[in-house]
Amino acid sequence: MMEELPDGARRVQQVLTDRGSLAKVLLLPQTTATAQEAANAVGVPVAYIGKSIVFATENQVAVAVVRGDQRVDSALLAQALGAVQAKTLRADEVRRRTGYVIGGVSPFGLPSDIEVVVDADLEAFEWCYVAAGHPMAVVKVDRDELVAASNAKVSSIATR
Image (cartoon, rainbow, N blue to C red; front, side, top):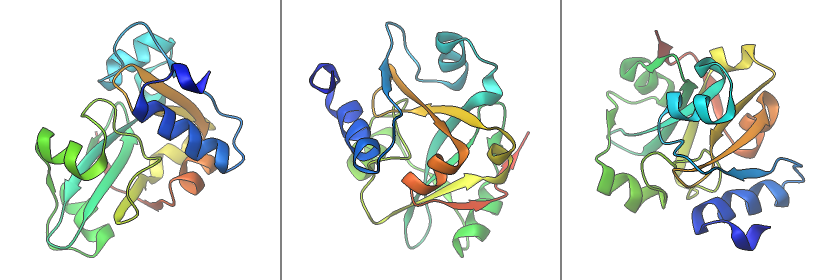
């Protein structure tokens, strides 16, 4: 099955498998590039989608993961990272730094110098779907696995 996945999705599946996860990357026939599209594709409320947004601070690149019905508060994210400010990266920079295209940025399989910050509100859910390395791929993970497999920091970084 892994050989049928596009490169980015295969990388995500490999990371999860290597960590002993039973989660399986789903390659869907429609786009999952936005939180709403992902929710529609898998038939769940948009709050159950963990969307990934890539930011840069003065010292690092970070991926913020928040519920699909929320937005990242860049000031809170900067504070969580011990930075002065955090700004979103342009699409070309996202791909260069993460290896994923916008709409497919996964919290798994990132370069080791990228920090992942998961919003504390996601811990209210037992599971969520997150991008899996391709704009048509998602993976359902439980909240503990999301944090552990992405080596994430948990912090309140979202606003409605």
